[in-house]
Length: 159
Length: 209
Image 1: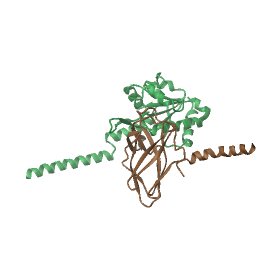
Image 2: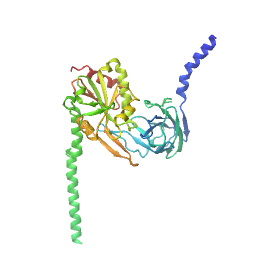
Image 3: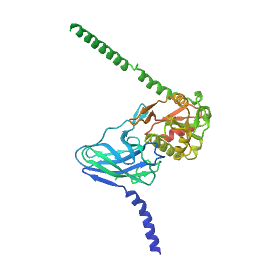
Image 4: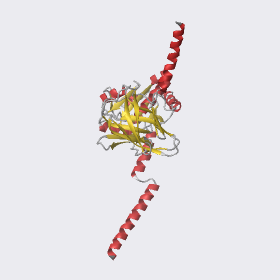
């Protein structure tokens, strides 16, 4: 009995660690892509957001040139830019992924904007996003839909 | 042929003159948009709730005047619920500050003024804000009412059409911190850490009326 309780406690302690480690990671060529997440939406009228972390393990620079997903008719790369205290969100034609560096699409900076949503993004669900790289080609990753209040990937963006 | 050269030469001279004049105006900060930027910053610094006369409608449908806010510290920020990145981030930051303030947050009112009144009607604001800290109230109005209120804060906003016919809004993103006397105490920028933001709010809370 005591043994079972101890085993149970051990398992309970392990569970959060497991949940944290459960971060989908996809590698292709020199790139490792992980921690893809989005926020739940209210209906389909508002654009959704897409965040991800891209690590370039190679010795040549690459560029993220676009994203595609079945959940949105018009997914685009954007950057939040501050000019004299005014926030604007220009379209980013490409995002540099320099050799040996890790680039994050994260709140307040680069982000994917999923416009013309086909369906409401519900917390707990996930959807695939295909990232197009100049050199590594197309890489698809499962994107977790987190609560509307989420501010970072549930699994932690840093390894 | 000769006449042609003369006309071309004349055009070139005018173009060069125009360029030099523009360059001069740019260097001295006399161009209309430069002037707007400086006066906007000056107007933000001078923001005074007691001197404002706008009227807006809360997310619950109630009329709101700036005078209603006097006698308590206020946080005011501008955004729109169609905004996917900056606005959720600001709302989440403010939620963190409110948590950090603990019981002192009871003496503070927090207002999101939409810069997109066309889409952000009271019901839409209420629905959206129900996902965040319940202390955060929403304000909207007719486009004219919103323009008047926003201008009183020295805030700038601009409708930016999108390729698919939809639109997004550029807007001033800082959070205004007003003391109980209605005067602007401090501004908090988008990327400020809670360790920097919370003392600014406490300073406003502790000001004499």
